[in-house]
Amino acid sequence: MSPGRDFIVIAYVNCHSADNSAILAMSDAASFLISTYSGATASGPLLEIPTVLPPRPVTNGYAFDYLSLIGVRYRVESSVNLRTWATNNGANGQIALNLRSSFSDTNRVAFKFYRVHLP
Image 1 (cartoon, rainbow, N blue to C red):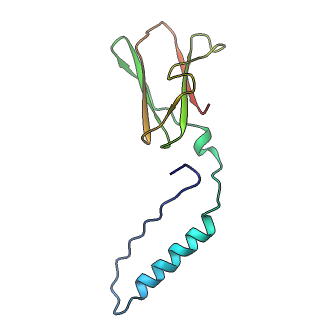
Image 2: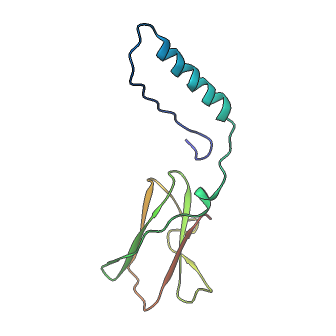
């Protein structure tokens, strides 16, 4: 699956019917959703602004989590002066494997700033 192109619809119906009308109605609803949204493209701030959660101390440094989308590449960068930034999780960032990703930095300095964004 690729973000913004694939979607999964799960529906649960808690009803009983003497015939198969509930099943037919669900089938019609699923067909409508697929035909309406199959060519849709994702937009908006969901992919553009990752949410960084509060940092926590770890041995000789700090760690933090950020909310992510599975299959999307994120870059974690750090700076000591807010002018020059260094990538900390690979030259091109890393692809998220979960909805919550973690980063830790054990290179402790007096002041360090972090940001997470899409490459």
